[in-house]
Image (cartoon, rainbow, N blue to C red; front, side, top):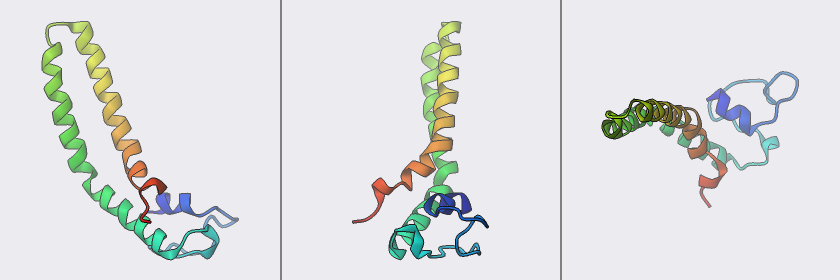
Length: 106
């Protein structure tokens, strides 16, 4: 949560503008409405809770494709590398992208 909120608020001196670390704490200096911050925090929490399921499903789907490369060791090696890259990208970037400003309510 702090990682997400730190992107919303610029740091000043003590790291957090208002000096505390309460969940869904509103800071008027961040140029967002309180509703938008609350929505982003709720969205980030929802995404964080579902990520283990998503990663498991992704790993299963990528594993199904591995079958087609079993006859060619070099292609299998490339596929395994691609599979690891896709999995890493999903686990590192997906939570932030689903909580990004593109998905804010209007």
